Amino acid sequence: MTKPALPSNRSMPSSTVIAVLAYPDVAAAIEWLCRCFGLEERLRIGNHRAQLAIGTGAVVVAGAPPGPGISSIRLNVGHSVMVRIADVDAHHRHALAEGARVLSPPTDYPYGERQYSVEDLAGHVWTFSQTIADVDPASWGGVLKTTP
Image 1: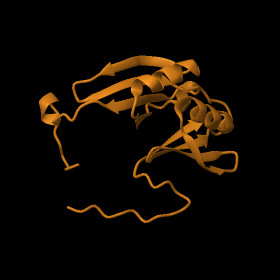
Image 2: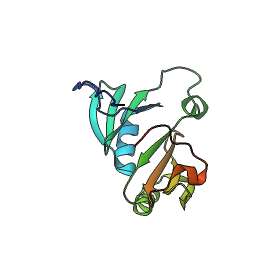
Image 3: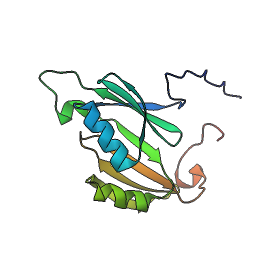
């Protein structure tokens, strides 16, 4: 089955999946994410929102609403971001040098990925993943639902 192409819109990233993450300080989040993780600012919308790009993916940084209750618990509501990159180890070293809090070090997984996870300045969890092998999902219990 052929998947229809998404219409283009210069106001939106071309990615199919876009993570939206809330931060109490949008400008600080943009600076930190770009410096530490290598994202690039694509579009800023006032001082309350921005689109960041990484490879063919995108992240939207959104200002957390003002008022009581702004906390890492409220900001981190169980979401995370996974980003595919070429060199997990180099990225991990860079993120550490820039002050990222490592939750799990680079590790090889049976599904053909080498990954590490970090927490950013607002408590969001990011997993960076490098493909190290082309592995049939059936070999580790996965069920492929679509053809890549």
